[in-house]
Image (tube, rainbow, N blue to C red):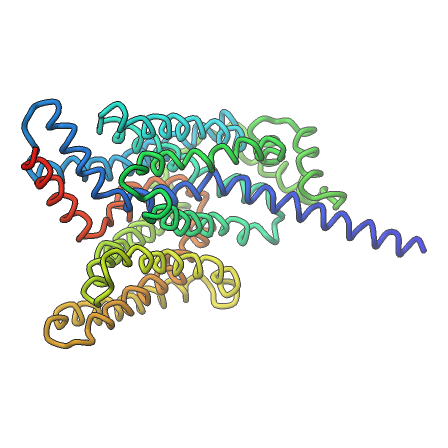
Amino acid sequence: MRTRQAHLKRSKDLILQGKVLILTICAAGIGGTFQYGYNISIINAPTTYIQTFINETWLERTGAPLESSVILLVWSFIVSVYSLGGLTGALLAGPMAIKLGRKTSLLLNNTFVIIAAIVAGFSQMAKSFEMIMLSRFLTGINCGVSMNIQPMYLGESAPKKLRGAVTLTSASFTALGLVLGQVVGIRELLGGEESWPLLLASNVVPGLIQLMTLPWLPESPRYLLIDRGDKESCICALQKLRGNDDLSSELEEMLAEQAATKGQRAKRPWELFRNPAVRWQLISIIVLSSAMQLCGNDSMYFYASYVFQEAGIPYDKIQYVAIGTGCCELITAVTCNAIIERAGRRLLVLGGYSLMAIWAIVFMVALSQQSRISWMPYLSMACIFAYILSFGIGPGRSCSFLLPSILHGLCLHCSLRWFFPSRDKGEDLPGNLQGIQQAQFQSSNT
């Protein structure tokens, strides 16, 4: 009888422990890397309308319309300032995580997205495209901070045997945000001419959800013990996360780490290069991060709408087909967890890049022969989806797993991501051209 009661109690503890961990993952993710994917995709839908708004605003101010090249320049700055904000946020993330804590940093980080949503929401009313630039910069800061701190918070909160899988959920939330941003951005929802300011301001919703849920969950036990030296709070947080499990081994491990790091200050990047013990790990992080950003996955998003249009898909239906590209990333983000432990990180990275190289060659041939062979546009479409799937199951997800395990250099890895153009620059080519033409047409009529 006692054995049965003990078994039932153990089962209840495991269920409670699982619920707390799942809530922690969801609360951190919805206001964390979800925002990165969401804010990448929502800027695509209102491309034409924002370009027209830029031209009309300038026409009202000066009485003269802007040239198409200038409109494109302003629009490019609106898009790219997001990456500049992301780099700023990535550089702020380290000091914030140490001084404020992981959970508190994620909560305060929502201040940037709330201000950004207010600024973007009133930009059309204020007739100021500069407000959109400011909004995108603040949104970038929010995403730069969350992309660094969320994996750190989850990795330190998860049990050791689940740490890798829990950390990888950050990539899943990025893919989920990408898909939901594409869905919300369709014309029937918030992607219309009158509702685009609401679309840009809709990123406040995930931030508010995090503000309502994350305060009820524990802080990172590692931060509480090692950075703050608060052993009692650390044990309390571990009990909430682990239930009645034996915490002695995990606590001893953190105490050993605390003793090893006592009196040491954080290393600067150039100091890491001088240290032979971590030099090659640092080089590996830089090479893998740079390769992931320069591999051409984002260019596939750039050409996607053009290829779909050449395949005969009506222009007003392309937005629905484009959602499939985001779904590809979401599928790979979910399935990668199931195979990465069996296949191994190295095999998936090398295999992914090899498949991407093959699809890139086929895609190049298909694009060059589109006007001559009738079925080539369909082959181009297939290459886009195959390329994105190869990236997602290979370097896109495996590097997210591999880099933190090489070195505790996650902040450096996420900082490097913002040095290279992200897929928020991957606006559809027909959308850009049509936006400029429409802006010119309206100005000439005025």
